[in-house]
Image (cartoon, rainbow, N blue to C red; front, side):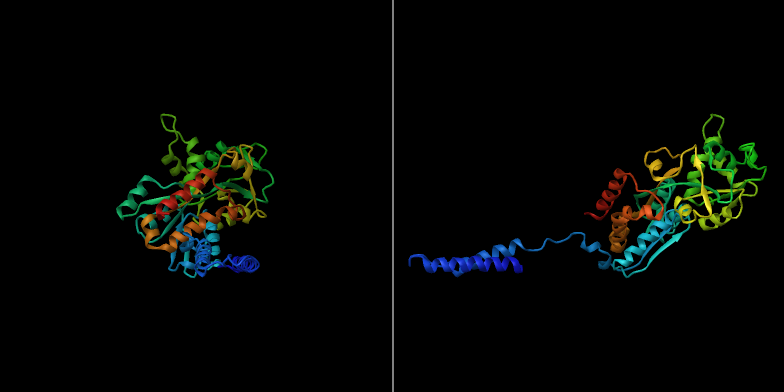
Length: 352
C-alpha cells in the first residue's frame, strides 16, 4: 500500500472509530476481518502492471550485435548504437560500412551479421540466398535519404543541373562543362561515384543513368547504364563516402553524389546542386518533388531476434528513437505508414 493511500485509510478508520464512540452503544466498530479485507482490496488495486517491453530495455540484455551494410545508413545506425549503449547496454555493437550489396552478402550468404543496413530494398536473389541458410529477412523502413549531387564550394559556375544532364555526365555522353552550358569552362568533368557494391550506386543507376540509356524497345537498360558508368574513363569509385567528399572538394571541376548526411557534414567545402530546379531539403522530400529521394532500411530475421534478445532490443530501440535523431544525422523521417509498418513487423517477429 502506498504512503498516501495508507494515510487516507488510517484517517478514514480513525474517523469511523470516533463516530462509533459518540454513537449509541449498539453501534459497533468495524471488525478486524473487515479492515483486513479492505486493505487487501486496496493492495490489489495497487499491484504494479508488468511492462511487457521491459525485457527489451538496453540495460536488460547482453551479448553482441553485429550490423553491416550501406555507407548511407551507417551514420544513422552508428548514432542509434551509441545511444543504445548510453542507455545501459554493455555489450558490443559492430557497425560496418561496406555497401548495401556487401552487407546483404554478409547477412544472407556468410550469415555473419545480425542486421543488414541498406539504402535499397533487398533483391529477390538476396532473399533466395538468405533462404538457403535458413534466414527470412524482415524489412524495417527507418528513414528517407535525399541523394545529394555535389560540386566543390570553389565551383563558381554551377548551382543546378537537370536529371537528364546528370545521367549523361555519368554515362560519358557529356565530358566537359561547356557541353552542359556554353558559358561554363571548357574543362574536363571529373566524376566521383560510389562503387558497384553500394546501394547508392544502384539507386543512382536506376534514377539517373538508366533513363538516358535505352534499349531497342525504348526502355531503361540498367545493365548497360551500369557498364557505362563503371567503364567511364577517369571516373573515381569508392565505397567510402568520405573519400568521395575529399575528391570532389579537391577540384572546382569535379562532381559526385552520395547520401545527404555526408553533404551536411561537409557543407562548408561542398555545394549541393538543385536537380530539375528542386533543392534537396526536407520540404521537397516530403512533398515528393525532389527527384533523387530514396528509402533507407535495416533488415533482420525472426529467428535471430528470438535467439539473440539483444538484437530484438536494439531494433526496438532503433525504431522507437530514430525519428528523434534522423534529422540531426542528416536524413528525413520515413512516411508515417511505412514507419508503423516497421514497428508492426517487429511486433509480429517477436510475438508481442
